[in-house]
Length: 113
Image 1: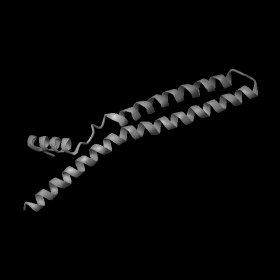
Image 2 (image 1 turned 90 degrees about the vertical axis):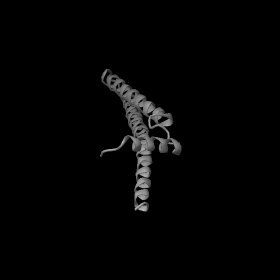
Image 3 (image 1 turned 120 degrees about the vertical axis):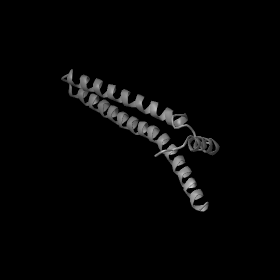
Image 4 (image 1 turned 90 degrees about the horizontal axis):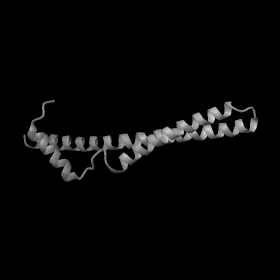
């Protein structure tokens, strides 16, 4: 696609008028960072629980470690979902703005024929 500089500038101006947030700003950035942190914490908790369960011969301690490991896995999955929400939220917002702009340009071309 060859886009002229005027068209790119017009797109930027239209996006500014639509008041679309920057994809890397606000809640999306917070969700991505929080999700990544939860994934790391969940993995660390799971590994620590695994090591705890293998360093003891007491059944009760091993069962407690298994529950902690399951909690770690759940936190990791929740963090992954939050990370994906943050990452894809900004992308889809910008994609939708671009789609609207392209449809408007297409309509203008058809009307001006």
